[in-house]
Image (cartoon, rainbow, N blue to C red; front, side):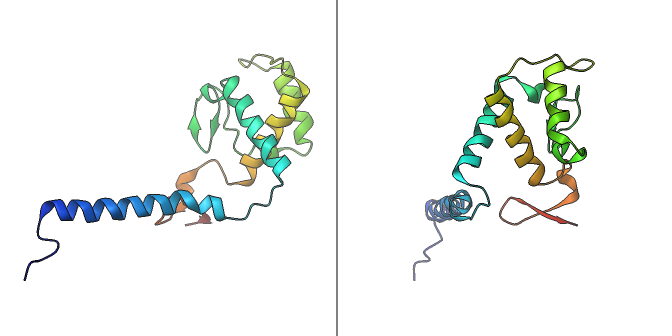
Length: 143
């Protein structure tokens, strides 16, 4: 009787098909997961991410412990202060220490605030404190 998995090409093909199926499954999970945000809020978060990238905020600041080290980690900056929006706007518009003042429009500021609020709601800045899951993500439940 010929063993179906005896040849290296067949083993490779089976592993490749398994890898492909697993990859499609992993990337399809967010497409079918419910989101607590409206389409407008998701659009504002995406606009804010673009403002974050356009102004190269990641070169000085970190999100989830990843990024530059000149400025503070901004993962939970939105929930750190009582009057968070006014505080964040003031720092961005006036600058502090090594951080320059940024001349961004009100729409860009609104998007950036939504982006930081969304990042704040998704976890804390140290991913090492969280449990890695089998599907390649991190659980927000502490170890």
